[in-house]
Image (tube, rainbow, N blue to C red; front, top):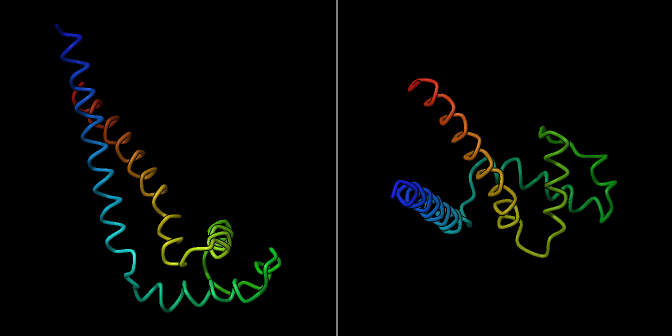
Length: 117
């Protein structure tokens, strides 16, 4: 009986996480065309610079923005995708949002178990 209750709670937890994740993706999709001032004034001009610099990785050599190089490399990859840039950048960010949420949950789990014990 106790094992069934534990399995039921785990199933409920996974179902809850799935629903919250689907809601997060839906919210992202609803705002996919939103252009913030950072996007318009910084991100878009810098990525257009990467796009206009040519098809090769040499485009990264002349980058004049203030993002870190690993992020700029990911932006360069997104520029190469055959989809609108706004979509690509949001698709790039989504896995990192989930990864950050996972780490936040792990931190909360550790701190709450330390407090409760």
